[in-house]
Length: 75
Image 1: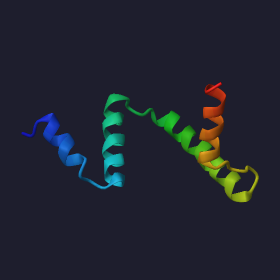
Image 2: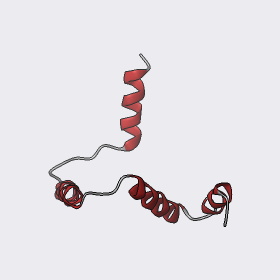
Image 3: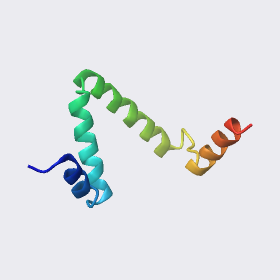
Image 4: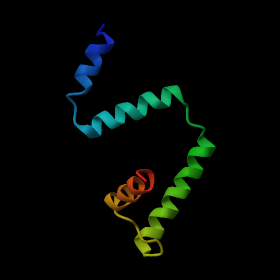
């Protein structure tokens, strides 16, 4: 059996998408998903995506968001 360090070393060589899947899977073992809540979050995410696609909601560039946050907390 591989040690924890060996597992982490091996995982770190994987593409980011595969590492994200592993992280998600591990987090689910720590915090099991309640199906009712999961379904509600999916509805919220789909509504937000539809609002963005339809132009109902305007998105803000991530760089702009972080710049504003830094400005706010670097006073």
